[in-house]
Structure formats: C-alpha cells, structure tokens
Amino acid sequence: MARPPLTVDKVQEFIGETVYDPYGRVAGRLVSFESDVDGLVQNVVVETEDRDVRFIPAEAVEIKDGRIIVWPEWKTIAYKVTASYQRALKRLKGLEDIYSRNEIPSVVYHEMRKRLNDSLSKLKEEAKKLREIINRRMHEIEDNNLKLDRAIANLKVSYMAGEIGEKAYKTAIERLRGAKDSNTRELEDLKNTKGRIEALENGAIELAKTKSEAKAEKEKNTAPATVQGLQPIPVKVIEG
Image 1 (cartoon, helix red, strand yellow):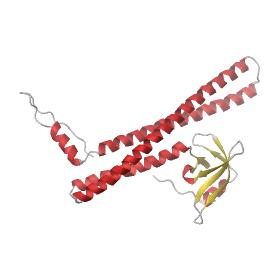
Image 2 (image 1 turned 90 degrees about the vertical axis):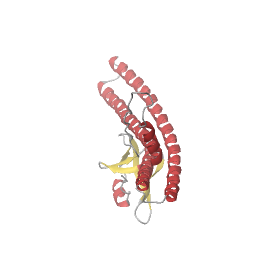
Image 3 (image 1 turned 135 degrees about the vertical axis):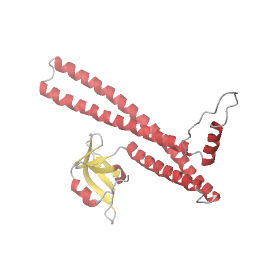
Image 4 (image 1 turned 135 degrees about the horizontal axis):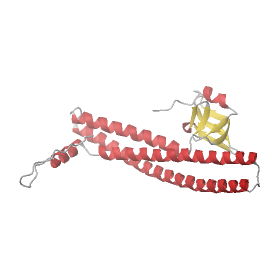
C-alpha cells in the first residue's frame, strides 16, 4: 500500500522537534524542509547531534504516532523493490489468466510477456544488490552489539567495584540497553525484509513458467507408469 504524500501542512508542525528512526534512535532535529508549489515536501532538513545537516528525501520520511520518522537507506530501497516486484507479479499473473482464456492474441501476449520478463530481470538485479546491503547492515549491527556487550560488562564491573555511583550506573546502563533494543528491532526488520524479497523472487520463478509449460509438466507427471502392475499416481500441479 502506497504511503500518503508528505505535505507542507503536516511537516511544518514538527519544525524544531526531535526526529527518530523506526527503531527508536534519535536521528536529529527537524530544522527545515524543501517543497514544491503544490505543497508537497520533497526533502526534510535534519540537524544531527554532531551539528551536521542532512537533506532526506520525502520518500524516506513518514509521520507516525506523532513523530517524524526517518527510514534508513536500506529500508527505502526495500520498499521500492518490494512494491515493484508485487506490481510486476500481479501484472504477470493477470496476463497469464487472460491469455489462458484466449482473450488476447498470441503475438500480443508474447510481446507483453517479454516486457514483463525484462522488468523482472532488472528487479532481480536490484534485489540482489539489496540483499548485499541488508547482509552488510546485519553484520554492522552484530559488531555493534558486541561493543555494547563489552561496554555493559565494563560498566557493571566498575559499579560492583564502587568506582561509579548508582545514579550514574542506572543512567548509563539504560542508555546501553536501549541501544541494544534498537539494534534488535532493526535486525528483526532486516531479517523479515530479506525473507519477503526472497519470497517474491520465488514467486517470480514460479510464474516464469508459461501455461503451456505447466500443462506439459502436468502431462508428464500424470503419464501411465511403464512398470507392469503399477498405476499412475495423480500429481497436483499449482498453476500460476
């Protein structure tokens, strides 16, 4: 489902407010935005905690639960690839259905089929790059979690040794555990997204078979057995 467009009326209410990522981390503060004359926001301007300024495209921004949420790059790419894959698969399924009912000429079918196959080939390459980005990000989070575990262990030792007070300990441990919780949420999102992309690719492979190929496969699987005394075993074939 497409997200609603980001408008000036909605965004201007959050000027000066804290901006978050989808996993609860602070991304910075909203300081400005860029928009067209039609009132649609093209970019939001976020000042990070180190005083840097980032221009973030509207497609990577959403308003949720009264907050401005900024998606990481991998999630924005995944949203595009997933939406394109779903659209292509629906069109391919529809094309196969109307062709099987003889509602379009064969020459038109093959022409449209070729265009869709070309689109799926490009999407396959995009999905491959996305999986590489996802794997790289997963490794980064795993490395960061190891650092957090070390920091938590050192903090606990210092607290038990009486080197830091209880108030400082509780403040620090809460921050460190919060960082791990955010990592856990993003890691789960990464795994789920990777699974959805792979499922869509598998669906594309299944639909890559034409009706005639599926029919030939069915006839092959349901052919009488050649061994004397054996009867053919019905094989159910799921088409398109």
